[in-house]
Length: 520
Image (cartoon, rainbow, N blue to C red; front, side, top):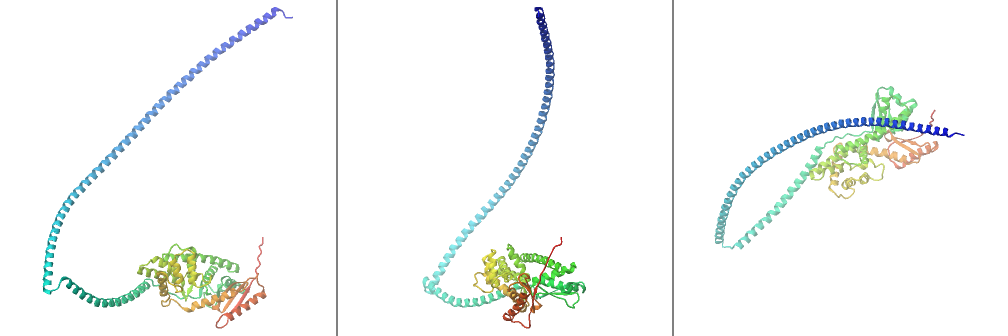
């Protein structure tokens, strides 16, 4: 057992330890407070220093801002002063002008007052003279009555009867004279009008041909064009539908076809082949296809140039393309596009001379034969086809009627139709403008091809050798060799039954099978 002394000692030791600990803690608290107060004083000092720096910076900024505002205020004040000075100068100038105008007005008022005074005097003088003239006329009238012994009414009746008799006699003579003169003047004016328009647009006319010549660098090129066993020339004629004539003429190869578009494609393709030097069937087909696309673009440009030439704008793209195709169409050897342009110019001139709308007349004249570019695609004559096309693409009623009636097919409803018909006759009747032989020849060629194209299995038909030969390409899938021979015979019989022609027509039917594989 622990004794009481020990317990007391332990308690005393604990109390001493507690007192010591309390003292140490209190001492540490004092030290901490002292350090905290020192830190606080340092923080306060730094804050005061920072506040002083900021105060100085703010004061400096306020001073700079005040200086800038003062400078801006001075600039604005100076600008206002200059503006006020300028306005004052303008006001002074206007005041001077107003004073001058007032001075001029005062002078004009004085002039007007003087003129008015003179007019008043003149009016009074005229009135006085009028009174005197009235008195003199009354005196003369009384004197005439006394001399003639007639009253005023009776003298008036006799005078009017005499004048009426004389006027009736002279009126008949004057009317007859003026009628004759009017007829002479109208006839002279109409002749002068037509001659003036024809003289203002004097276009040259050249005869169309059915052949085109292609220059070659040497005679060796002829052999390359023909190819081994004639395969190149056969491929070319098949792709283009023309007849290639290679004879002894040096340096020239002849391309023959009645279809001018087809002939132009062949001519351009042959020139490209000669320049390229690679002449074989696949290359020929590739160049012909590219040339056809180029010619289509050329046709579009030709149509646009024609519209630009006659100042006709706003046409539908299809109509512009059809106009370009007229470049490769002839009518009695006359180029249809040049004929349409000439009719457009003549129509515009005639309409201008007669007081009508020249621009509308040119539009009617340019489009009057548009049906000839599509008469192979639709039934009927070119006036009806052209009128339907123009109506479909939104042209005015005057333009549609001019195309439908320029050959007197229907009743004329407006003057522009008559103007276009007159211009069409003037263009077609010029010396050397047309020849009938080429038109008949082209119609015969087209008829040959159309008869052959009606047979089943026929893909293409080309009339060559001026119509003495017809080459027909049939489908290898739809026909056999036996059916191709039968088609050839039936085409020849159709020609014998439906056509009248001198000599013979050779019908050649071509059937070709192609096989293509790719080596990978």
